[in-house]
Image 1: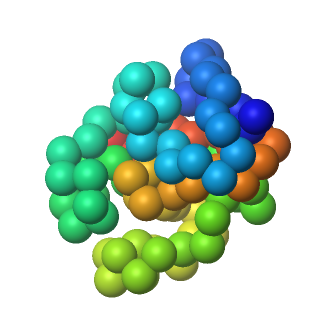
Image 2: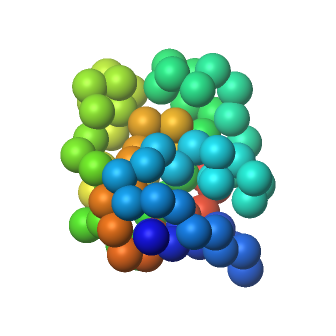
Image 3: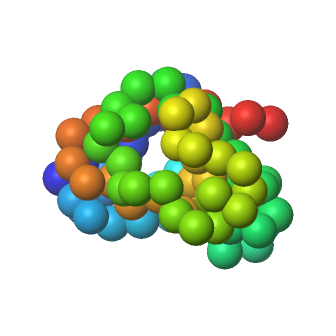
Length: 87
């Protein structure tokens, strides 16, 4: 199991699973869930290497994965990831 942290909250997520449900439950705002609106834009505070590769939707949004990701597009591979909502 991997761990997703948002602020003072943390939740276990199965390795390889999309993080959107866990992130939303911990306060990251969502809207479209398909990578087009940008509502779930999040700063990756730590554990960037534990996230899946940047998706085409994120690239189309202008992201390269170095600092920010769209939470609806990320899968956690393993380990721990800490996010902070950009909004």
